[in-house]
Structure formats: C-alpha cells, structure tokens
Image 1 (cartoon, one colour):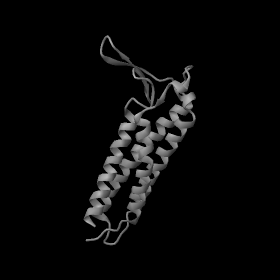
Image 2 (tube, one colour):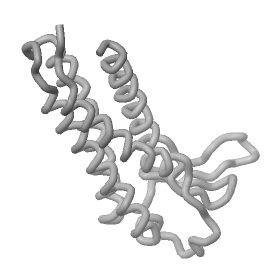
Image 3 (tube, helix red, strand yellow):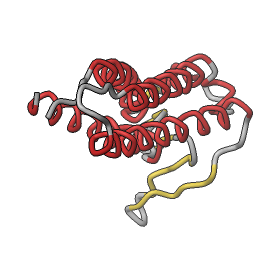
Amino acid sequence: MVFLLVSLTVLHLVTLAMLLIATLEKSWWIWADSEVSDLWYNCFYDNATQGWLCATTNESDWLQSVQALMILSVVFSSISFLVFVGQLFTISKGGLFYFTGLFQAFAGCTDFAACLIFTFHRKEILNDSRDLTKGRFGYCFILAWLCVPLLLISGVLYVHLRKKQ
C-alpha cells in the first residue's frame, strides 16, 4: 500500500512538472533549428548575440483556447495534488480519494482538448503564410500529449485508492 501511495504521488508530481514544461517552454512548433513557436512567443535564434529573440504571438481565438486549457490543466492538477494531501490527513479509514481523482481527470480532459485544438487548428494558431510541411511539432507538444494518458490513469488510480491505517 505504501509503495502504491508513493508511486502515485511521484507519478502525479512528474506529470505536473511535464505539464508546466509543456505550457511554459518554447517548442510547440519548430520551423527550423533556429526558429520555434509556442503558446506565448515566436522565437528566432540570433547567431550574433548567441541568444533567442522572441516576440509575442499573434492572438487568435484558437490560440487563446489552447492557452486557457493548458493553464486550466495545470491548475486542476495542482488542486488535485493539494486535495490529495489534505485528504490524506482528513479522510477516514477506508475512504476513497474521489475528489483527487476527479480533479486529475479534469486536468487530463483539458490537456486533451488543448492538444486536439492545436493539432487540428495549427494553421490558424501559427498564423503564418509558410508551408506547414516545412515545420514539425516540438517536444512541448509531445509532452502535452504524453500527459493525457498519465493524468487519466492517475485519476482512475486515485478513485480506486483507499486509505488504510
């Protein structure tokens, strides 16, 4: 039981870290090795200064939807962890962690919706006249997709987890 509890806590924290990285880092779409786009900025690597020059992205309704859903996913997962810690000390023996699992499942659903919107509406989100076949998805987009099953699985595990003394 202790092993399951520790494993589930580590899974939750790793997934939360992956969500934060996917939301905040600058690699949702890669045009070339020296040009990337994310949810917040379009960045170019400047060889003269050896650094990234970033400008804010052009706002579109689809981009704002993805931004909001990713932030909601991080918030739901954070709330889920806080509720779990609270329930760990307050729930009675034999009680189930329903609220924790519910918030974790909400985090998975909002992350899933954000990934789907970015996948199917990337032309409108990137708002670029270039050919999308010359670019590719970045590691933050892949991290966001990897979080979907991890969040849903941990949500289901939380629902089935019973507190024992």
